[in-house]
Image (tube, rainbow, N blue to C red):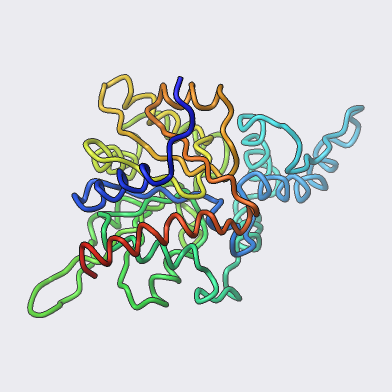
Amino acid sequence: MPGAPDLRAVQDRIFDRLARGQLLVLVGAGASRWAGLPSWREAVCALAEDLVPALRKKVPGVRERFAPPSPRDRIPVEALMRIPEAHRYLRGEARLVEKLAELFDTSRIDPARLPLQRLLVRLSAFVPAIYTTNFDDLLEKTFTWAGRPCQVVAGAEDMHRWRFDRVNGRFVPRFPIYKLHGTLGRPGTLVVSESDFQRRSDLASNPIDLRFCSDVVGRELLLVGYGFADPNLRWIWTKLRDLEVLPVAWFLELGASTDLELATFELDRIVRVDLEASDPDHPPELLAFLEGLAARCEAELGA
């Protein structure tokens, strides 16, 4: 069983895919933590705290009380998904959206101080699309700050209203940011609770899942700030493996991989790239890796 690959060899392989237009980027909550936003687990734990008063009112005489978990608690994802489900049921959709908007508020965040998002914007010149499971708008804000037109694709209606800009007499499509789990700007698109994930348990259930599958087949995938733990993507990955069209994915691990992780991820054609970051919330090693890719692309492939 091989160990974690050499960083230089990985950069060479990913650059080769970028040069051929054969790489997609998938961005997870780890990228937004740079700006101080919560992970999905942290957000669910905050929802749990907000849920307690409604639980006490709904079931006043129960002997065993629900104790809101801490983000450090080892609770399975499946159990955590029940919390937003209960929150929506007992506190209502409006309160759920209000709480999520509060947790993922970016109104005071300056994109100029987001080096990771700025690097993703630079890399976007060499990839067909960026996919993200994040609700927040940090990527969109950074694209706007950089003067790069983009469009958010969070539902079927966005695919019918593709946006173009006229450049030198030609219509140029804006760069697509696919929101796999929706956007806070349109609460109806959010995927946050158990039933939301269950509705995505079919390749034909959501147009963005279909687009992701279409885009990723024949290409490779770079995972940035993404833990590959949510049921939606894991289900899609299993179906692609069953169909024998599973792509190679490059998982930028901030720590060090165990032998079990290396072996099981290899089964899914996911290569764990150990960066062994000194600061998991603001990892300079991740910035250095992406900076090396972006600078090489700009030098050898043009702006």
